[in-house]
Each structure stands twice: as structure tokens, then as C-alpha cells.
Amino acid sequence: MPTPADPDVSALLSVRQAIDILDAEPVVPRIVRLPLGRCRGLRLAQDVVSDRDYPPFDKSLMDGYAVRAKDIAAAPVDLPVVGVIPAGHWPEHPLEPGETMAIMTGAPMPAGSDATVPVEQTQELGAEGDVGRVRILTSVAAGYAVARQASDMAAGRIVLARGSIVDAPAIAVAASVGAAELEVYARPRVAILGTGDEIIPIDQAPTQSQIRNSNNPMLVALLERLGCDVTDLGIVADDEERIRASVQQGLGFDALFVTGGMSMGQFDFVPKALVELGVTLKITKVRVKPGKPFVFGVGGGEGLRASVPDASVPSSPFVFGLPGNPLSAFVCTLRLASRVIVRMSGGMPQDRWLTGRLDVGLPANGPREFYQPVMYRQPGGLTSRQNELPSIEPLAWKGSADVFTLARANALLVRSENEPTLPKGTMVRVLEI
Ligand SMILES: Nc1nc2c(c(=O)[nH]1)N[C@H]1C(S)=C(S)[C@@H](COP(=O)(O)OP(=O)(O)OC[C@H]3O[C@@H](n4cnc5c(N)ncnc54)[C@H](O)[C@@H]3O)O[C@H]1N2
Ligand code: MOO
Image (cartoon, rainbow, N blue to C red; front, top):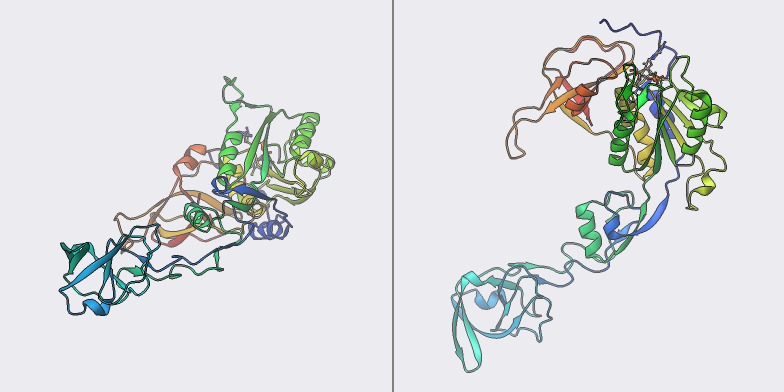
């Protein structure tokens, strides 16, 4: 079936204008203090500072013998073994000229020593009296197999910056410096509401005219991935009263995502309900495909916010009205709503672009910025060095309801408004999804 031609979209906001509005909206992220083990994936609301030098002492990097390098310059040399330093123990006395001590990986070097000779380069000799002896077979330079105090990090330096994500390496850093609790930005609490008489829960059998609710589960997954604490408010029928009641419930959260009922149909009640509930609509319709009826609103829900058990909660909820079509809802969330969500989580919006060559040529684009599902493929190989560029296969686009194609895609090609044809082999960048 031919795709209907676009109605005139020249009066709508461009994606750029919509992004500028979203980025200009003030956001107050909530801050919480959590045990380190519960911070993974959240952003830091504080700098973390190193409490001491790392390593905290000159540290042996190998199992072997601590020496003064100049004592063994003429190796082989036999030395008396005047002590043993296991990791976790402080040397009992300094190393005098002409002596050595057995030392383990991670142990503090004794004062006076400047290198470790690995045990493989030595030979144990018999004891002389009650003092053991060792033959040092090869010489080493001063500093060999020793990490100097503070060579990894000096005390008092910022080791994790505010705004950065607490991932596994950051957890290792926080643990190292003894940050057992961290101040982090709390996950935004978001609610999802589906609308439409035709939408039924996924565990019910649809009649001929009904379809299952794919938007709510999709958005739960996507928004959890974006770091939100998500509540699914289910589906509400196309009934003004009921939509108003459910939207009002959603306004008690930090953000509400509503899908469906956003467009021009006789039963598209959502924008009207939002306005009646005190939400200020800052965006209604964008020159984007898919996703044209996208709505962004702020405020409303007065009196409901008091029930949120946290004094630092932002005063106004944000509302994202997404078109009912699943691809439209997906693209609008990923491209537009995520910019506010990221800031609510203490971050700055950052697009994840990947670059490659088009597998096939593409026709000219229409008047809306077009997000086409694509398959991005890396060339083979196990190391960073590559001569080949990644390839980008545009997937056949069957319209805004085609979740099947979306599920095969791993990126979105962004075609600008009225972009001319793109020949096969064109270098393009795509947004990772
Ligand atoms: N005369 C016009 N008609 C339409 C226009 C227009 O400009 N003029 N815009 C079209 C565009 S673009 C889109 S996108 C859709 C979006 O419409 P709505 O946001 O009002 O959404 P609905 O009509 O309620 O639903 C659209 C479509 O999506 C299905 N849907 C809805 N909810 C779900 C759900 N939870 N899970 C799965 N699928 C869902 C619904 O059954 C419809 O098929 O409007 C065009 N119309
Ligand atoms: O055509 Mo509508 O823009 O989103 O799918």
C-alpha cells in the first residue's frame, strides 16, 4: 500500500528546535546517599577524593629479593638474607648495604632498598649460621619491580568526578579510597500510561479489532535502561474522564510517559486532559518521522507532589506525550525525552554516534527528519587495528507500527529534512539504540 503523503508540516517545530526547548527546561535532580553496592549505574553527586597515596608506600611488584641495585651491579653476587617481608607487614628494619630481604608481591620495600630481583633470577644457598644466603644471578637497575609511593595517585586528588557514572571501575576506585557510601543522583521516578480502546494487556486474547499493548512493556525496558525507576500504570480507555484520572495519578511522579491519543482523531483526548490538569505544553508536534504528534509538558499535579516521600523532589513533573505507534514512541523517547531524563539523573545529554558506509543507496528524504532502523555491522577481527569500515544496512521500513523491523535494528539512521538521495557507499553516522 502506498504511504500517504505528509500533510503540510512546515509550521511544526524541527527536531533541533524541539531539542533546544527540552535542553532549556530547568531540571533539579534528586540527591541520595547510598551504600557503594547500591550505586552502580547512578551518577555521582559529589567528587570522590583519594584519602592517601596509591600505592601508600614503595611497593614490590614481584616475589623475590629486595636489594640495593648498586650492591648487585657485578652479579652474580651472594648476599645474606636478613629478613622476610610478606604483603601486609611493615619491614622490621632498614636494609643495610650488602644485605637482602625476601619480599613478596604487594609488600612494602624496606628503607634503603631500591629494587626487587625476581625469585627466578636467584638461587637459594645454604644457611651460614642462622642467616640464610642467596645468590643474585643477574643485576637489575634501581627501581626495577618497584611501584613508587603515589605513582598511581597522590592523596587529596579528585579520583571520581561529580556527574560521572558509577560503573565497575569506579566502584573499584571508590572501594580503594574507602568511600563506603556515596552521594548520587537518584533514579527519576517515572510512570507509564497507555491509552486506547483497542489496547489490551498482553496476557489477554485480542478480539478482531484489538491489539496487545506493546508500548508499556517496551517503555519500561527502555526507561529502565535509561536509569529510571519505572511504574507501569497500565492502559486506560479513550474516555476523557478516565484519561484525566489516570494522567492525574501519573503527575505524582517525576515524569509521566503517556502513549496514544496524541494526534488529530476524535478520541485523541490526551493533550486536552493535560492542559485541564494544569500542564503547560511546551512542544506539540515535531517535524520528525516517526513521532510527529510528540508532546512535552511541564507542571500540573499540584498537591500530588506532597505525597512523594522526599523533600528534595523536583517541584514540577515532566510529561512526555508519545504517539501510540510503537516506533514513534521509541524514537521520541530515545531522541527527545531521554535528554531530560539524563539531566534528571545528573548527566548531560550525549548522543552515541557510530560511523560506517551505506550498503545500498537511499532515495531522497521527505520534509520530516527521518529515523530509519538500520543494522550496523563491525568488520571481523580481534584487535583494534582495522582497514575496513563498519557497514550500515538500512532495514526496509514498513511504518511506525513495525516493531519487527525495529527489533532487528541496532541503530537509527538520521536523515535530515529533504535530504537528497544518498548513493551506496556514502559515509554516514547512525545513532546507537
Ligand atoms: N489526520 C491525521 N491523522 C494522523 C496524523 C495526522 O497528522 N493527521 N498523524 C499520524 C501520526 S504521524 C501518528 S504517529 C499517529 C499517532 O497517533 P496517536 O498518538 O493519536 O495514537 P493513536 O491513534 O492512539 O495510536 C496510533 C497507533 O498506535 C497503536 N497503539 C496505541 N497504543 C499502543 C500500545 N500501547 N501498544 C501498541 N500499539 C499501540 C494504535 O492502535 C494505532 O494503530 O497518528 C497518525 N494519524
Ligand atoms: O508517522 Mo507518525 O510520525 O509518527 O508514525
